[in-house]
Image: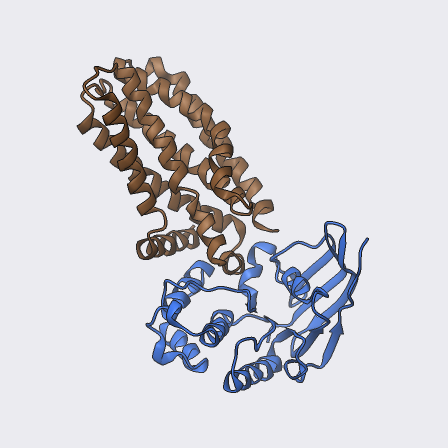
Length: 211
Length: 220
């Protein structure tokens, strides 16, 4: 079994003169589910984007280790699964085409049976050949879970995981979080108490005013 | 490299469905060549002027279509998806390959139309023209791709693209004009070595600078 460890050391992010957060230091390990909470605008999404290597921190360091060896930035994308309401998949492709291109651009083997299984898990199998632009917002959100899990990542980052989902969709997500957290590292950023109920530790991000 | 190829394939597949760039390019080529034809009318133009106008059409057509590589991702909000899929170098290579394919298709069509419609466009050293055409197109594609990446993050994309492209593409276009003149005159390869060397140097410098710069552009 792989041992995944994420370390955040003195992380600071500013946008212009505005401090989003300052000197955050945490350590995250696999087989755990962590929560990131905070008020609107406190920087939860910025924090998870920095962890996912989408944006750079102003100060501090994020290191991803697998079996005590640091993962190179060039290879990091294949270790991370990310779901967020602001993530947009390709509307002009069907769900199955999206998954095909995601695997190929990642440079991993595309297994059509696994892709179909993923779509069954998110209840989109019957609509797999329909263009994503014909999907409802809830269906698009469910497809993002297939996008995040198709490459079996070691770290799953969920920003507002139940946004746009109905009760059935929310139960599906909570089940994913619970199951994935047994063997992998899961980080959930949300305001909803119900989204954070499976978390073993919750990090509270404070609102900073200005420099 | 293979990952970049699949990004090119994705972009091409997407282009065939959405027609973001192809329609804009086709319309621009048709309109520009028609305007030149109508404005020349029955006037007898020199070979040099016709050769120069070819690169004017190519430059402005490139301005109308090549920015789509990154702008369409930014407008649709799929930039984040790409950032999660692959490292910046793979993304840049994929977009560059897509623009190279588009530039070659566009410029082959323009040159063929030009050769058919303009009697005074006579190339006497075809090999020299093809060499300049190939190296020049790669230079246009590289420059357009990195400028597209820069302007995709800006607010007024449409205005910024030609403004930024003009000083960067000007040295390339000037050398291409010179080489087109040489090929019309039927000059030999030996007489054109200096210009060809400048073209190759331009491509190498722009490609290296683009790969070095892209990492900073791609991440906010």
